[in-house]
Length: 233
Image (cartoon, rainbow, N blue to C red; front, side, top):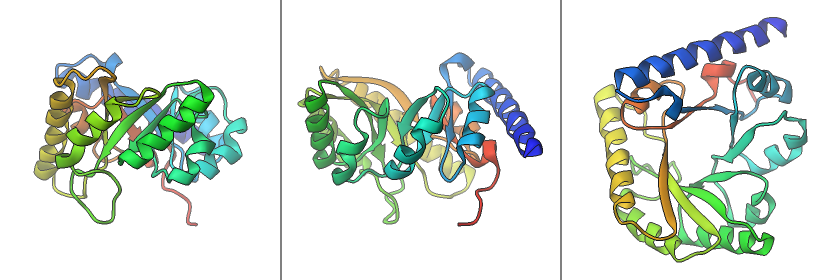
């Protein structure tokens, strides 16, 4: 276990250095980029080790998994990054600081409803299915403007940006997808809708976060790069 914790510490140092170098190369401020630790299947002990090494943001995939172990985490901000069913919204609103996986007006309205009941405003990202894959959640980029305008009419939910998980592909195609997300982000921001504050692009994972930084990402979501391969389920 001690060796495992040491590896987590070394991995985080390496990734933070890579983020710094990628940001400088792209002409960006490294302080503008946040490293998120993706906690799926990880133990509270592993996650708390990452927090002790300077991780301030956690990404949770599953509502029930998070709720069962939230009290075991040390202090850190938490985003829900996994698919959210409307019947689980009541359980998670108010428990995380952001929901990154909004992909329909039905889901947005339910988040708004439950947030209103608690007297809060919930920050969200719109999840874009940039590769239009049947196996992935997210809205197609062609429908993003319509969803943004619909979210703008809701008072207890605030759209803060975009999230995406691109398909597995070669680097050239990946750059195309990342660039597409950045352009979409700028286009929505330029609409200057009253209830929207576009300031986050959440893209890039363990294998491609440096390339994502080149294309404007300011939250990179890293799981295996920090904790190692997930244990077999």
